[in-house]
Image (tube, rainbow over all chains, first blue to last red; front, side):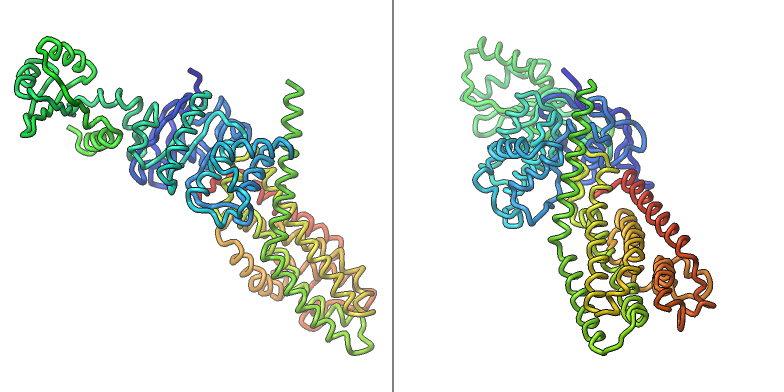
Length: 311
Length: 261
């Protein structure tokens, strides 16, 4: 898969404080989530990618061009976290202005503006002055200006902030559509629940370092110190628990009062294969099965715990 | 490949032109225009009152009105109003990020917005000179011709200085106001050659030279022995070099600086 953004051994110092420490990664088509606490280095990474900051060491390139160069901006769309606009303008005029500043003629800028306003669901509301918009509408306009020149790399800093749940669903749908068109999307968000379903790949960042990167399932599997927790509801909990205890991958089985089993297992995908065999062999019915700590939040908590308390 | 490159250059030029037009329009509709209009209105009333007395001479107009009101106050204030309302205001309002995300090279962003600031500032300073000279009656109208070039050169130097302040410091308007109202006045009135650090010194040299036909020159507080004027050609050259140098410095600062929100 084509690399759209290449970050090569990048460090960024703010005087004596390090913002980003020897980070290397590649952003490819698909949705990449960027997760970390405040001050972890998310904003620094984003500002380096958008060319607002220069790396102290290393290099950030977009489509082979230095991120700060004017040429690289043709491939980059950015939805910044700041809630600032040319307030006297309407949403439509703001997006059209951004299209003109990307070098499009009056007609093409107008056409592109209408396309992206429709994509973000603002066609009917874009003629009001920006100063009168709700937070969610402002987010949509910011997103529209990021998409107006059809960039290959779209960097979104907290794009769902202030957007109502229905709107979030619509925007997530839009991100997926863009991904399906081959765009590379980097989303920084503190809404970790949405990362579970949105991101193909997640970058966990802490104190300027990338703690882990990959799909959530891949990262979860790598966390050997933290066996996956699986809840199973069945009418024959005791019998199933006995069968499962014999498996190597099962580290512990807890029998709950309400006929529920709580398992601690290693290599969860491999375990599911073994579980299927056990269930087929024993004829035990399973009513419900849930992996309860494979969410972005759970993985993030485990990673942070491992980082803060290394063995 | 050549076609692509040519198309790219044309696209950038179009975007740069649009940025100039956008900056011009936003600056013109800003509160700076109201401030300038208000100040010029007040100055016009003062000049109209001054001109009521008969037998005013061009020398009196230049010394009592133009140097005292326009050169000392309105000229730097008009310049700073627009020079610090361009990129500096974008920075304060955190909208600069949108300009830096466009595929325009930073020097072009600086030059496009600076051109808009310079044009508007020049319109107010040269236009203001014209208006005050017209209101000043025959004395003012006679003085208009020699005064305009001095105003134009000084506007360029002031705007370039305040543009540099704008891309270098936060709260550029306050710093520029402090410079225009205090430091420039203080340095400009110091004895000896220290006053040569002030832009207003060169403006006065140009005005004294151009107004020689009306019999004006360094006198009173501007006593030639204290003022030590330089030749008009030298003053013009210095204002041009100063303007160009400060503009280049502003361009370099803007090109290489990291602007975080």
